[in-house]
Length: 339
Ligand code: PEP
Ligand code: MN
Image (cartoon, rainbow, N blue to C red; front, side):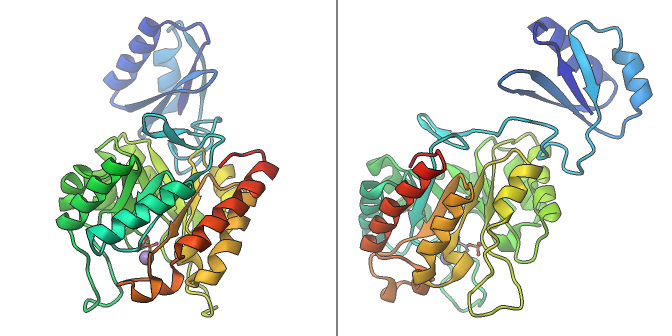
């Protein structure tokens, strides 16, 4: 259920309604949209009882039932698209498209620094890099762990880029949170509910990647896990799903952009690197994504892809990344966005 407050409702009236609802044993999720103040009420509730208890409160405009299974992530909760502030002066979900770029894995400080300087010069605002690498094989490089986090933070501070990195274990949320600006939840962990709840207890933005074979419903329910803990700063990321086709690493589902935007108010980011698995398919996929309304891209870039410790085959060299951003600017302008 959503309580829609009147436009002229006072702070005091809003507070009174919230405490009454909490007294009745429900959790409240207030949200101030561009026009209206709404209060989401989550819990097993009897509508008649609630109407009776709240009927006499001034300030309430109406009570609207939420039929979406994903109550907080769904469109009913917010008609306006959500804009998430990553840090001062940097947001996602507004007119400006966000480019996140960097190596698949943090390998050493020099690699991260040269990459960061280049991607910044070409227009990225967020530096990506994995310090904990969940690899298909336990014998592959597993990441530099805390040393990798320190490198990302140092380089992020030096360049002014925000940092995104993956957290794979609920026990590491605090550690990773000390270094990163955005938590990345990997595709393999999309339904690791303990991990989702743990990042949900923080207030840091979370980029949630779609699971390898997750439906939209499962994807949005995973977002709901994070939001139900009070962290509304969730960014959805389509990174390709598994289908019968195996020429590409995954099948990048670009239609997910309009679908997710119809079902949810959360920003949508596309990962054309994992979505295709081939460096030469990254640019066309990225261009398609912007044309279809994505709010951002997360792209793997490496100074020397042939020597990369992971995902070199899908990583862009600096020059390719630079020319891609130039082409993306034209597409962004055509769909009334900026880059
Ligand atoms: C990554 O971004 O490096 C990564 C491991 O992505 P995914 O979880 O989408 O496979
Ligand atoms: Mn990768």
